[in-house]
Image 1 (cartoon, rainbow, N blue to C red):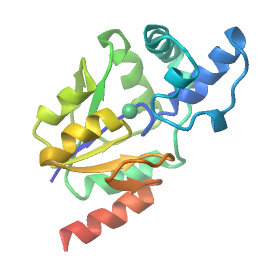
Image 2 (image 1 turned 90 degrees about the vertical axis):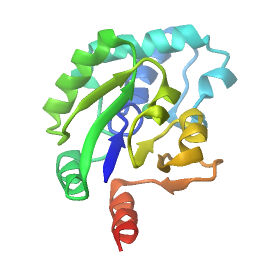
Image 3 (image 1 turned 30 degrees about the vertical axis):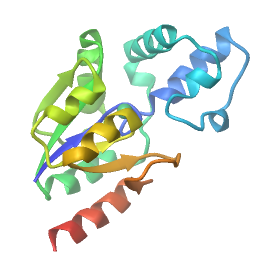
Image 4 (image 1 turned 120 degrees about the horizontal axis):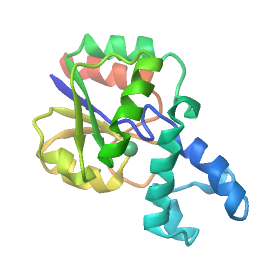
Length: 175
Ligand SMILES: [Mg+2]
């Protein structure tokens, strides 16, 4: 089994860093205001600004928290099920920061694959995607299995809220 593991929003809680930044320059918002993947639209934040700010958050990669504790052990466990690759859509200037972050948190993976645009991931040869983007989900679900890592609802996929849950699903899939 080939597993594609997303970074932003799945391993790295970059929104936490972004909130700290945004709250210095805009009216303050809390994590509870973030109810959708594209929450920035509702808050009238320019798309270009938002992605620029995420990129700049990655410059301070060592301040970006993990989404869950023990990602090191979790990704080791995940690797027992197959080949785990990091598959991330981002501006290439941030790749080195992401790799540093993965090393800092001792994330287990085989290959690092970076694409320019999220939905491009669906064209890659993976059996399972763990991702938090509904845009990607639409494309993944045409042919592939996807596990939607989110605390928000609203899309018909396998919703998982923790990696523990995902490991359970994988065990079921294997049997
Ligand atoms: Mg993501």
